[in-house]
Image 1 (cartoon, rainbow, N blue to C red):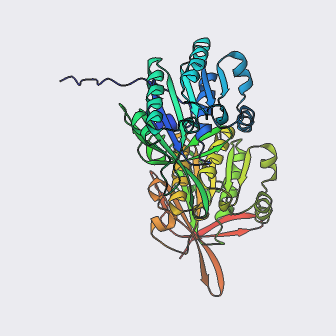
Image 2: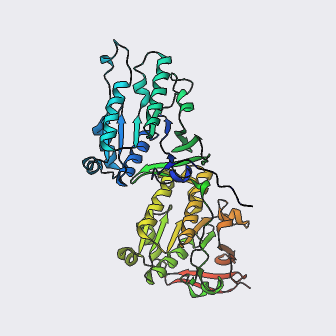
Length: 473
């Protein structure tokens, strides 16, 4: 029996990173979308980026601002790397400053017909099918009758629909405990409604987006964190991630021949490796040896450290026979350092993903999973690590993560944040006190698809490097 192919509505790409994925293809084409949000949530920037990306693709659009002046809007765009002037000159972007002096209309009945006449002329002149009306509520405040206000909004909605225009309207969210006039009427009028907010999580500010409704289409219905930074808005829809990991690839050296033997011949391409242990067991040293060896093969390595600065890490590793200065100077090794508390997990994630895109590394090192908890909440840290591991696996990049433990033996506790199911190889490091002397032990707890050693081995760190010794008796 043949399946019946159901019709779908037309959609218009926003080209905003992650948003079209959540909207299952973009905004409803030829219909109205409403964005509601409080101050600082990015309402204007969402609309501006939508038109900017469309104009770059040769699709003209008009941005009408009833609150901000054109100059500051363009200055804000410049900080994100958006060059609006060339698009204005080519006729694919037009910014209309629609601010109206209330004193000019306070003595009479204000309507939007004259505004629509001006807009209609500009639409035809540009051949535009995309409009953003920013701060529509400011325009509506000039109407002193709630019934007329609704009538004008219905007229605007019908006017846009008659011209088959894809419209994005922004309005302010009511403050907590208040109901700001009748703008909730717009929720029922619009075909797609998106809510933005800005909240504090673990003393860190986090912006979130939620699609409330979308007529005629499925959509991601969860809350999605997003950041605003160059090159624009970036949404992080972790719940929309599909499992499209690449198969584990060829083996390559861990940097230590003896360790290669213990894990079954070396690490696998596109695999995830966890090096876990208490403080002082040698996690950073193993990662540095691994990074140095990879760079010696002319591979590029991104090393993300949440625990040490670049200078401190380079200095500390020299004492154990690993000199990272030449690999940093050549550009094959890039260190990305920051305190976990310096920004939210979303900003850390975007920073890491941008670095991966720029460097195109074969391997990524993250130190450490335990430090990620200081980004705000444990859930935020989990989402950060999940996205980084998933991205690396999808791109065929080997990712090595460390985690500081207190000698626990459960895999979820060893991973530190519940990511053990994504880990292909787990190496546990231990400090053992014997006869008033501390010995270091190494155990390969897991190595997916490999015949690995199940024995505990002693290893030593000296100024000559790392040496793996024999099995523990």
